Length: 342
Ligand SMILES: [Zn+2]
Image (cartoon, rainbow, N blue to C red):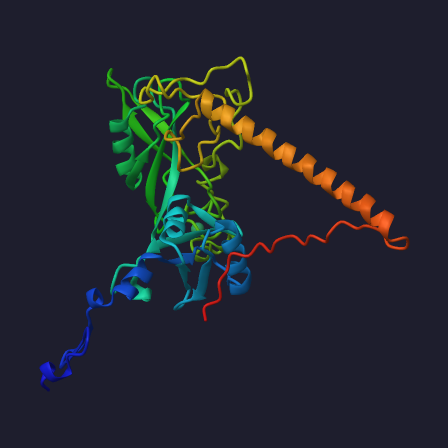
């Protein structure tokens, strides 16, 4: 076979097989930039219709998303703007029925079956560190122990009750519960880990995706020995209290990395389980005044609309003896984020 005769616009056929040069197919490459592939870590069947409906509503993509079932247990998420795809990747971990979803980008020429899909980025709380240890290089070391460090929360400071780091965790191995760090005096202390947005995991083997009732280790025994070395202690406390957002006499500690011109304030989001931690722009006085002015403007617009409707009602009553004015029927806007695959 003479490959030269079969070299077609990005396609090359040889004795070894077919080669597609994606560089010559910019549209295909661009679509791949908007796509994610994923799988649900669940020990039960996923109903595709419910899954696609609920995930599209959870993600609320600005330009919608097309979801199709790929091979085996894998799903293809084609976003119609790369901003949506990037946000979904950044704001995880995502849950469906409390089961974790592993999502990743699709590399050119990747085969759906062989995309690893074994890592989820978790925000991990590190509790029990000695004073002075709440700093990036310690976060780097602990992050390497847990997996791969992705981010260090800028708001970590001496006032923080725990260190917060974002780590890519391998979902095929048990969740790590604790580690030991050595203080200057040579004594080791135990630090404990808590995982934000932690869904279903096994209290027996510590792996995500099944409960202890369905653990493979359990079925190697004749009788359940009730050994459970993992538990809800891996989840953070549901709510943090005593911040400037809830107490006007409190001032949130100023992070060392924040500049004097950008202090934390009660208007900053209090939750730490967002990816924008430490980089949230705090509005200054002029910006806050603009917000107040826009709110006053919106109220005036509402009052004007009420007056207009009242006048319309009076005019209709005067001109039509047997007709009554009714407000125009306003149906709620459909909240759909899905786009059909066709
Ligand atoms: Zn298990």
